[in-house]
Amino acid sequence: MKKNREGVEIRKSLRKKAESMVASLSVNEESARPTEVLMHELIIHKIELELQNQELRNARTSLEDALDRYVDLYEFAPVAYITVNREGLISEINLTGAALLGVDRAKLINNRFSKFVYPQDSDRWYRLFLNLMEKPEGEKQKFGLTMICADGTLFSGYLDCLRRESLDTSPILRVALTEITQQNASFEQFE
Image 1 (cartoon, rainbow, N blue to C red):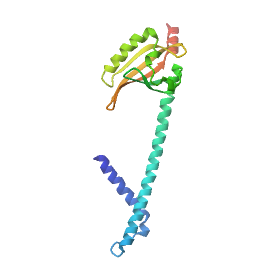
Image 2: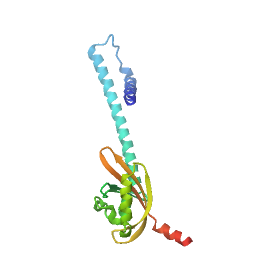
Image 3: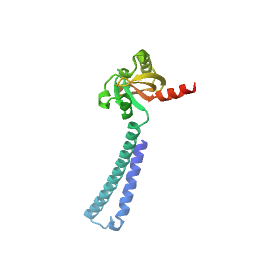
Image 4: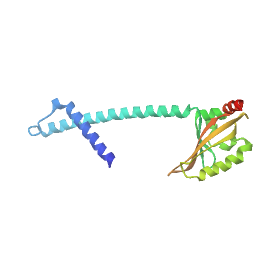
């Protein structure tokens, strides 16, 4: 209801702008011929459409700018963002995640996330994953796992997980994966 009122107000505003732009061309509706009145209305309508078109172009430009900022924020974040579906497959991953795991992003999609969990932590991951997929949406869980890259190198990973659900898809797990190997080494120096 509120959106309809806003739409009506926007149209009224555009009409007023258009009428002010053709004020010098206005006709006296009592003395004007029907064709003159119709022509005047067509001119106003044409200007309204041009104003709407300009607003749409501005909105599109703003949306494209916002999308560019979002893509930059997502793709080049300092942490790996990974979406894992209910079957445990990677459905989305940012460039940082692909670089961290050492695999081309296209090759990661529809691969098991557990493939990158160190075998000694795989049972723990499996239990945590099942638990997370059964938790209500919005409950976060944070934990550390030893991860393995495609080239076999190991790293300590900190996973910040959140289960999400939508009406049209099955639940997914959003994972922010941070390599904390260096931090662990730094902490050990102080012990």
